[in-house]
Image (cartoon, rainbow, N blue to C red):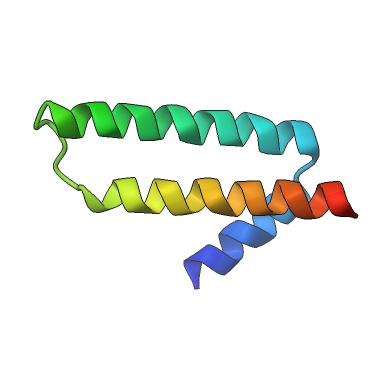
Length: 67
């Protein structure tokens, strides 16, 4: 599955890289929401994918913090 490979890539990164990726994903989500509000977004499913990726990143960050 594609998400499993993404999580494996996240596990290889350190905390600063994960935080940078989290910030980038949140910016992307903001831009997608803005495009959706102005009816410029073609693929609305992308919002759902980005939200899930943010959750995956946060899960990896929390798992690394506990370990």
